[in-house]
Image (cartoon, rainbow, N blue to C red; front, side, top):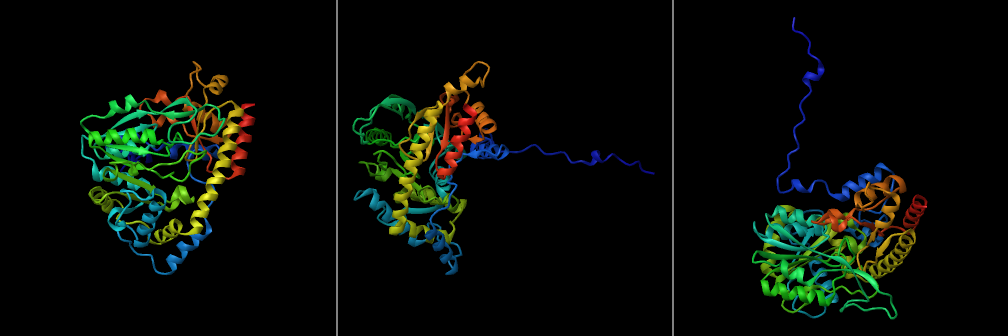
Length: 433
């Protein structure tokens, strides 16, 4: 009689996770990691940048109407005609008369599944293995991964806190105190360009710092791109979310840049509809060719009914009214959270745009003795925030090549309801008392 084997002898061996070498260094996105930590500790989530309120009702009704009227099959790969035209008109109202305006929206605008897909399509469709891409760090975590998937290399130019009364290209309020803002060293930017530089990945308004690049800064960047024959991939998803006179300027509108700039944006941040994933890429036809070559094999097309609603968002007075109201609301929430964090002992770098605040936690971390040597550690601080203060935030060192640049910082999102922010501040006050 055959002897019975212990059940554990039949247990299959779990295979080792297999990840392509291009992506293995990046691991799990920090946004997923911190959102999971928030859920574990039942913490208020000020980490991931999505609103905890819904987008405008008229757009949800428009999407339902589009579904009811049979707009449910594949859209054109470059986008629903109505939306391509609405994006072109949106640009014209923002940019004015300039060479960068898409003269043919059906040939120069590509609708994508969010700006995230547009970024991937740009990298995969326009970069060659061995190319170099300059990006300002800290950078959104998809940037180095997208560049790596294309076989290219990223060269970081750090943004560091500096003290100024305002920069050329931004209005400064009368009698304003010196403020800290993130800035780059022009010599470090010049040194980043090499014979292998193919592109600059520019994010303005900038996540996670909240920086809005000035005309002076963009002019220098444009001059260097023209001198080195480099293109610019401009991620402008926060284009309408600026504060205190820091006006957003699209680099495509500067002299010599219309033929070498791809401008990316999306519906999600401007209209509080991040889950719709409606993005777009605006570029001259010779660059659009590369974008579409990749886009057709990534997603091919984006959700048809949502594109019809997006066209209404960008073209209607209701849409513009919503944006103005949202900017006003965010300005108040930004002011509230900046003031509260300052009162609690953080050193704040007030954002000029986006809906994020970068705060220096070094003094608080030293008082809390979160590390043996008292040195600031953003991961240790964010773990403490989630477990002891029931508030989740993002540790920004993940956005730097040189992790030391971000260890004394923490990023909070204020794209939340006022009551959410008030509850978070109350939790922080109790924990830090």
